[in-house]
Length: 562
Image (cartoon, rainbow, N blue to C red; front, side):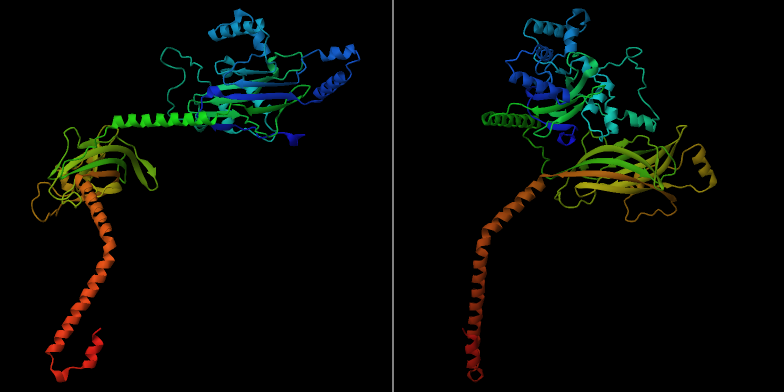
């Protein structure tokens, strides 16, 4: 019999653009044990022998509803179906404490005045019920085991997600601001990371339950079991566990206890399919909505595209100081500033200098690396008569200085360096090497180690070419320095100029002219060949007339003439 069951009881994830309130699910449970078969056989015998009056058999059949062994219900999203336990509970107004429970009390009284409940074994727990957030863990695990094969083992994430608290449970605090638990765990252990790294997204949950109690014992909590769990978020994601049957075999549910009864579970999606006219109307509505949203975004951006003045090149740099490695001491930070050459300018509110945070080094291979990941933005304008596409003689330069800080707030100079901004636009990853001035002798080394401080450059541009230098050759003879480490930069450069657009338009215009003249190119080549041939013929005739008659070889001339 196990071959006729559906053993795929995992979750199914669906994505929908329709409102979740339109969801309709048909759930059917049916008992398939020998007692149900015997009852069905006896009922058939009664129907076939209506003329006989068997009082005992009639009494046996009338003990419960005729369809007590099977039930089918169509349930909507967050539709409340009361169980026998809830009907008995909410009949007493004294137990109702919340507004929702008082509402359930009124609904149960209204059901009692009418024909009664349409369900007996199938009921629901909605997202607003306290049973959804406080459902006992052993009951959830028990219900999962009922619809799961013996070979399936839950994963670690599934076990831990079962213990995740519901989002509406409030956190009790010692006072109004300080919670009992620690806000930050500075040294988390592996077990703490393993037990705390759980995802808890805000989702709405609905449980379709089943009361699988024997006849006459409905309303006991120990016989309740979760038939279907539906979860959804605000982004159109619907998670169903287990999945819809979709024509496959039903799921097998086996109860526990002395009488291990087997039930058959069938879950189907019975949402009303949209008509073609409604689908077309909805597509037009979404299209109109997207067009209006696009127009709204265009109104925020504006129609005018900012372009620089003619003859001006605009340079925008979005950079990052990635890391520094190879320096002597720990706790590094970097000072940097931009130097603008002649014909370059910047807006007053743009800062041309900056300083990073202090960063501790981390062993990476054979080097100690300090990862800064410090972003910066730079923008400048060049006003020159040359075309912006040509290479400039002078380009902005960024000078940087690497320093270290110890426990007593004493700093040391670790190195100087510079970086010439790339001439070409795009992404660039550049590593710049640094050096520092060096003083000979043991005293300078001891001073640097104990009290900090080291020789510094008065002019940072001395790293490259001093700004005050006017000669042709720069001599640094006698200046002692020491190579220290390197700094890595990532630069994203953007260049904007009106000449770029004009050059592109001119290139396209020339291409169009060439395309128009392309059809006459072959004809022009033929005409040029014929014209050259005629010129050669005239020259041969003139040469023949000037030569003496005895030197003329008529046979050769005739071969040359066409």
